[in-house]
Image 1 (cartoon, rainbow, N blue to C red):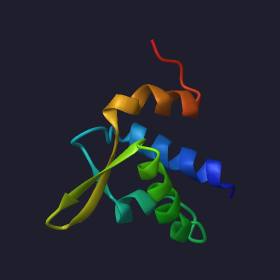
Image 2 (image 1 turned 60 degrees about the vertical axis):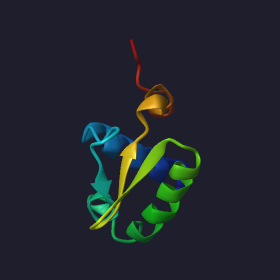
Image 3 (image 1 turned 90 degrees about the vertical axis):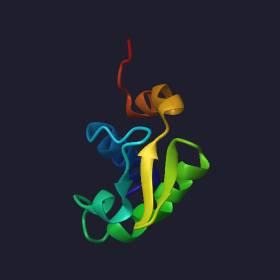
Length: 85
């Protein structure tokens, strides 16, 4: 699967689950739904999205959690091809 498709699937899953701002998800839960041969790549592409500031990291006592950056939500929707009002 090409990198841009994996990144888009990560963004789409987080958007569909309303994982924006303080509502976050763990890497393990984010990997669910991906084919088994892609699950190892999800972390790599997630780190790329964090570097691009599209996804925020939330350190917690039970591990790192991730959420979409609410300030970049319009960019996420543009990447996914979703019309925004």
